[in-house]
Image (tube, rainbow, N blue to C red; front, side, top):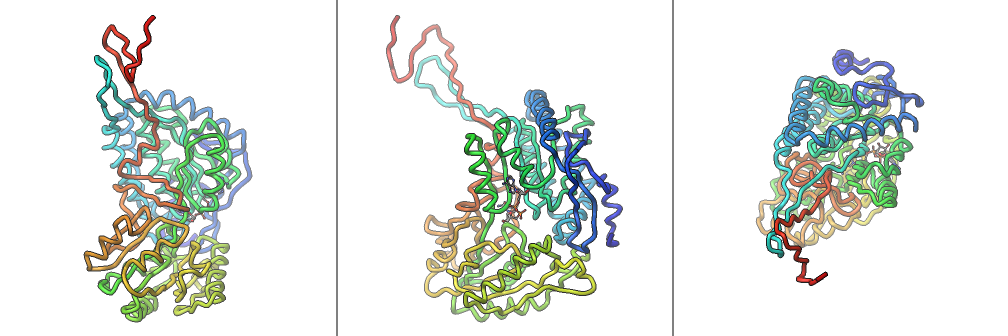
Length: 513
Ligand code: NAD
């Protein structure tokens, strides 16, 4: 294993050579085939995970449904206390977990630490929220009646997560679901299963220390077939799924066919609009980090720059210059800006995108290509590329999950740029760079961006946990994390209480016996 303290991190996190991929807490078992996790950093095998069989899954569901009966009656602030302890444990293990995220997934160590910080932040948020699961009190139209609403937990929440945020997405869901009184079953991406093992090890200790039953936090492992066990399972009222739009369409239909709820966090095709009034220096930093951070594998990565013709050449030249400074290599080495893609399939997709954009008439201003030789043995390192393109190109309309940035030119007013921006199937993140108040407000108005996230003078990528996170259209419409996203993890009940000796009916209806 590459010498960046990985051995020590694996030990701290309890990740072994062969790991049981099914877990209800401290109780780990698995009878399925073995999944290998190789690092895109150096191509070496990090560890193996035994996947979940149908029978293992049934054992998990038994434990989870049983645990729910205990967990749901614990007062929410006490559940918050458990989540607070989980946050503390994450603080202790931050460096080790950040390192594993970086090594197994390929993002920079800094971004790995950032991901763990997000987990800590959502725990803090959830602790406060555990005393604020408010419902409203309404005035009844009937005399001597009281009407109010309350929120109850749903039950077992299924979580399916993507490879690119292998730990944070789970915590956004679990921290909220737990304080709401739900229990969780998590299927991490088959491309980053060890991150799942590490997280489960951390939280299992916390539940055990508090004498709480097995099953409040469960882990299952495997590919889409294991995910399907949850989407088809009527015992799971809510499936929260993060990943590609392709996956989301299947999951949504499967869950809807049994009238379950799904929370979908799917692909983006995020753009920054650069107007004549943009601060060019800020634009370059925002666009370059947005396009090459996590090697372009964030759902909020910047894919398109929509630049006004009057500043087009200036912006293009500044960004091309910045790309020439990028250092590509081992993401655990903090001198590097760009790490590898997740695997060789992702490299193929990246190469296809470059071929397609040229076929459609695009012009590569930074050519890209795969890197070989010392330090690049995994075959997953690629050069970030920039292409001049037209908004309607098929490849520009799709989410290319790699560091490929498309430059698009607009003429006239900001409304033309907004139209280009909105004219894609996805609706996750968007941004405008401008010092012009009218342009900024137009972008945020009802005639503006149609995305779930719309920023002014910030790039598209990176969000804070305090706001609701998610997007519209093919991004799936789900919202996670802050604001009132917690409500999706609960069921709302309206209660009316009559404290008189009469029984007046609603709407003044008379029914005399
Ligand atoms: P993916 O769709 O290939 O896989 C995501 C997860 O879904 C995996 O755990 C996979 O096993 C599971 N899965 C796939 N098919 C399934 C099925 N039929 N039933 C049940 N589960 C199934 O995505 P990926 O390549 O891991 O991640 C990249 C994608 O995720 C990108 O499109 C990115 O934009 C998106 N993403 C979105 C957000 C967001 O919040 N909107 C966040 C992170 C990633």
